[in-house]
Image (cartoon, rainbow, N blue to C red):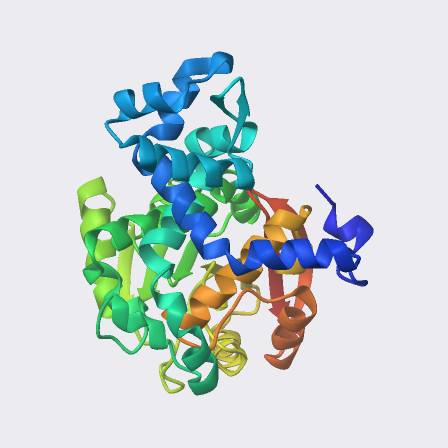
Amino acid sequence: MRLLRVTEPYNEDPFNALEALNESQKLAFSPVAFQATWTLKELNILAVLDAAGKEGLQITELAKQTKVSEYGVGVLLDMGLSIGLVYRKNNAYIIAKMGKMLLFDEMTRVNMAFTQDVCYQAMAHLTDSIKNGKPEGLKVLGDWPTIYPGLPFLPTKAKIAWHEFDHYYSDKAFPVTLPLIFRENPKVLYDIGGNTGKWSLECVRYNEDIQIKILDLPQQISRAEKNVESAGFSDRISGLAIDLLDPNAQIPSGADIYWMSQFLDCFSKPQIISILKRIRSAMKPNSKIYIMELLWDQQNYEAASYSLNAISLYFTALANGDSRFYEKSDFLAMIEQSGLTVSEQINDIGPGHTLLVCVPK
């Protein structure tokens, strides 16, 4: 697996003509490959093969154990051979390393479920989304202008997949980030785009003196306040319902730290600049802005960059039609245009986050 920052694999054509033809055919049938993979997992065919070990199983026995027809097992496993999920010896199918990843790797499981239950049908509307600058695929999940006010009301599978996806990446970054946040002993933190309140709760458990205000849409604040109350921290965490996309919505002053995690990628460049300018106006002399983001060109591995660029198209087709995961140069330019400068950058937080500490120019 190539290291992005070392080899810069995007500065030349990656394939010769024969390789390009081969990869093109894989791409042409990639939706079929995804659904075959999903079905192999859902019908427990991969799990049964894993239990069989290195001896594997023939189709007849697999059909008996999974209660799937021999025809069904056969066509799925033959596609599995082409994908690399399984291999075959003496007519027995044996699970391959990639098949094991689908069963046991949490990141793979979360990404697959997000693609299947949130994104798959919506991607059929990607062309219209690009043309119109609107999330035309969102209609497969519900009738909202963007996905954010609809998060509490998503279909059950989509809701579970969306939150598991969101929390998987942020949760792994939290333990690394908390000591960085509290090294300067802040007393007041504003959690902008606090969603369910998970980060705020992590903060008050980590530091007994911090006071937190969550800023988010009314639907999100209602849910966050319930979570905070259930956890017993209503005396230290409060909520402020605010539409941050409203350019007239003023962000309150009084915070030592303005915190945003996987938040600004939900907006277009003009919207990000608007939000940052309003935070800049609210800051005290010693306030700082901590921005934790996934930047696609700051990843160590090619697969991570690939994933982030794919998820950007979720924003296009489903979330709001005009946001994405940005590359570093674009993000720094928006920070500069907002009257801010980056005083510190820390990469490789959790599964690939970058933490940007910003102060007024």
